[in-house]
Amino acid sequence: MNPGLYFAIGRKARDVLYKDYGQAEQHRPLQGRDQSYDWSFNFSCQLEEVLPGLNTVFSVIIPDSSKAELQYLREYVGFSAGLGMKANNQNRFDPVANISGVIGSTFFSLGADVGIDLTRRTLNQFSTGFSLNCAFLIASLTLSDGFDSLKASVYHPLNPPTRTGIAAELKHKMSEEATTLTLGAQHALLPFTLVKARMNTDGKVSGVLRQEIWQKLYVSVSGELDLRDHNSIPRIGVSMAVKN
Image (cartoon, rainbow, N blue to C red; front, side, top):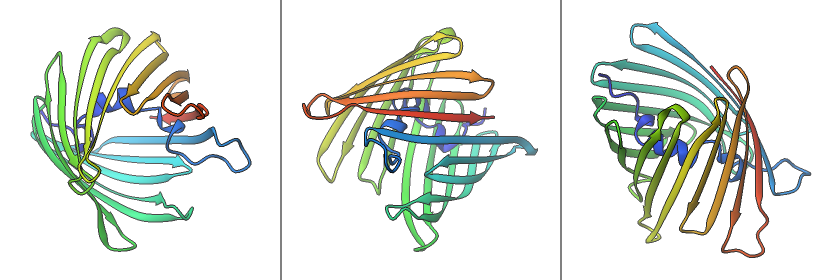
């Protein structure tokens, strides 16, 4: 009956709407390549039950970040603490730390997450949220970015054997008085092939194809097009991830 970790709040909807899309919108392009092409390499490894209820996670995302994390899960409580390096705008890496905690159950959970910039010794991230989970719907509400961003998300499974599901997220940026609605869906064409599509009210349409080419080895190809900008060039990303 443990509630999981803070990252699990809203994760189902977030995975449908954003997971594997990041290559086409977040990572910096390779020098000397066309600006429409980005790249990343993601490696993660988890060691479970090092001690009762204690897990360790190591992850590296090239060229952006690396992290080591301890996770503690017991009945009605989930806690994690991590140290890592994150790329900044000067192509350097800053040491960061994260601490998060969750209380509740598999049906309802409430938690908070704090990020610390160790170089400047300041809080650079704080978010809080809750999640409501049942068999046909998973809903969450989070407040983040220094209480500037409010997100409400829902995920509805349609056919679990084929991982078919739909998701929606409504995000309001208070400082900009801007609201964005994102809708998406996913479906497994084959046991090792997953396709996703999404669109939002900003006029952006995206798609991703993820293929498991070997046990725990995934390759994803994603693309994005801005329908409001007639001069925009479609962005294409390719990534490889090794997950344990």
